[in-house]
Length: 331
Figure (cartoon, rainbow, N blue to C red):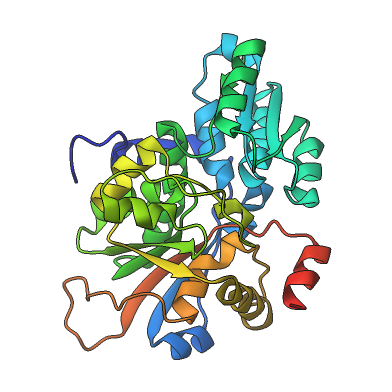
């Protein structure tokens, strides 16, 4: 593991200790049908069963829990299209602090309502004409709040990495780990754990084809900004990778696969009909890449080539309401 990165495996392990008894240890699902379809042993880390419905609670709680008492008394702020909003609101409630969350006007209604339901004050903005980072920083500064960003923060990244850490504790060594990519926090934390435990593993990120800022950035060797993406995977509609996450992912991520909205719909349908779980679009992209054959065959991590490849993937969230689910499945 590179020693000069802003996040270490020790950070991930410390986050796991901090989250013990607070975050759910989510199940790892297997399916003979899926294994047969893709020709591999697949292990699905079901973060759709996490508190607040997505992996984001891990990072949000890990970051908020490390604030000094005087800041907790003052309150926190966050910006998010939905899952980090809910996660931060829940973390704030657990730790007894107030929270203001900046959310786009077109965020799914169920996510806005859940965020408010956890006790947050919700402030909306137009994601296509306004800069949420600048708005969030101004809001936090004006009210004296600690800003907890959705991915570009070492404590958030370390918390997200605990999902992969738990996966490896259950499965042992894997040949590949497939992870959805939005701002890059989940894959940065996951890759940190993966490469520390199993240096030969291939870490593959997945982005919607219309939201490929990380793929473009990694290919260019620098952060690239794209127009605000339009995709059904709202949690991955990011214009540019985070500064911290990009540094980590540039060193530890091996490849980025792209999936279409139709690929994502097919994965949601497969998860519902065959795996009996509900995934939101962003939560289904890793599965979509595998089902659609978008993932390059990973090398066997130091093993003889007789056994099938062992692949882990993170199903990152399940925050979708019945109306939106029916709409997507009727497309």
